[in-house]
Length: 166
Image 1 (cartoon, one colour):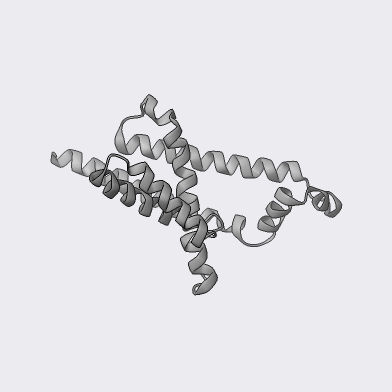
Image 2 (image 1 turned 135 degrees about the vertical axis):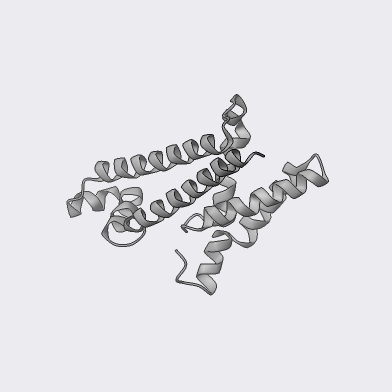
């Protein structure tokens, strides 16, 4: 790899880390405080929000917009990092991966999907080196996670020992 190319890759990696840090700074209102309570009520108890005077449709729209912006930023960062987006990314496997990452790490946590992504990527890499049926190994890990850690790994860790985890 040439020196210029290494500098570009380093700059892209640092940009992604900075972007992740900015997102982590912007997201606490969605996890704590009034906004979080309204979002939970908007998801499960629409009638109560109307009685309390909150515009449920507005908060659902905010949730969808924030989710879409985060997904767009992730897709743009992926494209910048690898300089390629092919038709294979529209397949069923790439649609299921985010669900697997979230289930493995923990759906109700901020760090859970990140930890799930790291562990699942490592698992797929190791399992695909050992066998061509690596998706069976991934499926078995997913079933074991759902059976023994229904809140995910970070969710279980937070519930048992580290309540301070986001």
